[in-house]
Amino acid sequence: MKISKELKVGIITVTAIGFFIFGFNFLKGKNIFSTQRKFYAVYSDIDGLVEANPLIVNGFKVGNVSRIQLALDTTNHVIVTLLLDDDVKIPKNSVAKVISSDILGSKAVQLLLGTGTDYAKSGDTLKSAQEDNLKQSVNKAIAPLQKKAEGLIASIDSVMVVVQQVFNENARQNLSKSFESIKLAIASLETTSYRIDTLVIGEKLKISSILTKINALATTLAANSDKLGNVINNFSSISDSLAKSHLTSTINNADLVLSQASGIMKKINRGEGTMGMLINNDSLYRKLDKSTEDLDKLLVDLKENPKRYVHLSVFGSKDKNKPKEKK
Image 1 (cartoon, helix red, strand yellow):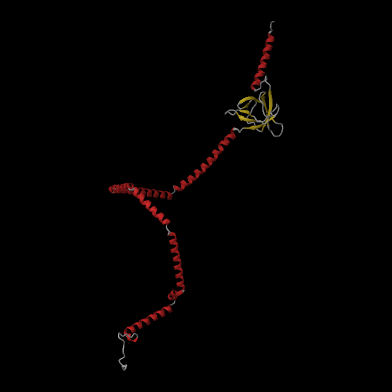
Image 2: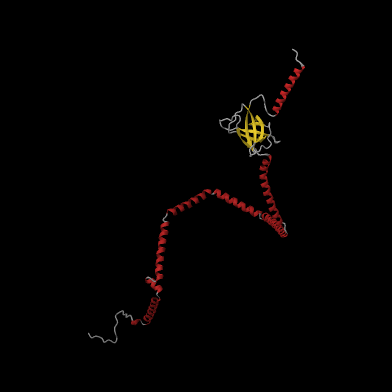
């Protein structure tokens, strides 16, 4: 059978139109030979999202953006139609988030799958979310730097104020005097160090002798460590003996005696008792003094005229004036 030229041209034309339609839809992200489900998401701002942008799950493309249109109400929200392959199950609590797919700013819709067991059906509206755009990201990144820069500028301002105060005329003079004082102090330290070095050199022999004696003393102590141990043990025994003795009771008795003596002295000071009256009553003192004076006079008179008070005779005294008795 011979095919005419017109039929060949028609077949070629139909085939070309079919390839054109397929290619056009393929470039738009539509596959006319596969069944896809439609889902919707509503955004307040799509930030450059266009039709045919990919729809991805965990970095894998599972569909694309089919249509973008403005809502007819007064909210001016944007309705995005998403085409999704049939073999992907989407929970109803999943989120369709607009993200940047590369550093050039190309957009995509990322499906953040939920954890529910109730799956969305074709025609359902998914929850929407939006990634920060470049301006917002830059602002968030620059905000901490801006705060640090402001703090740094304030610190620099404070430093400049301090520098201005430091480098005025009076401060420069004070700094010059301070440096001069530091210079003199360093010179004094150098002189002192030189004197110490000279003293050490001059007294080197004495220092060596002292160290030798200290070494000999340490050797002697080491050699007599047993004797020192005995001495320490003796002191320990003495301290134990003192601890076991009745030293505490003796001290308590002495304290009691001192307390009683203190009571007696208080009574004497108050004029109680013979001793108190003797010390505090001067009339008794005068009487005793007068009695002593009279006794002294009596002793003097007794010494000068003993016959007035004492008659002594070895053989018996006889009165010469008394007449003799007759036998």
